[in-house]
Length: 202
Image (cartoon, rainbow, N blue to C red):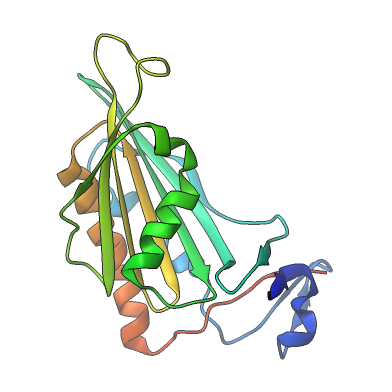
């Protein structure tokens, strides 16, 4: 079993230099922050709840399939029918995307959904592979008289996996947002910049 601990990867990354005395980065690589949604990428009415925030905690992995680096973003809007929230998670894994691994990422990202009412949807044709699901929040957790529903879309290209989860709204709403993010990822791969910057805590 292969154990990867980012805090010990200094010897594996060439050309590291210090920033602020505590973060080392490799120049010439692409920061995953460029893949994050921004206010201009969102439909009208959305406000950013959490700007893109890279993972700062030590990441450990036992096995061959693990997260190397990543970060998350959240936005929401209020409508007459209720609130809609959208979460984006950008994950760089140690293995390239396959449909089977996308499903594994879904199960690992949302273990609580395993006991919920979940359905698989026709996935949008974006990037190399994609999967999509809908879910209904149980009445023991959500509103009793008006079931709360949501959607999950996961797609990827190369070693980048992007997870989108919405609560409220429609599948088409989430698909529109995910397609914008997929365009950002596609541009990166078309440019040939396929090496992602890894921040290493020293």
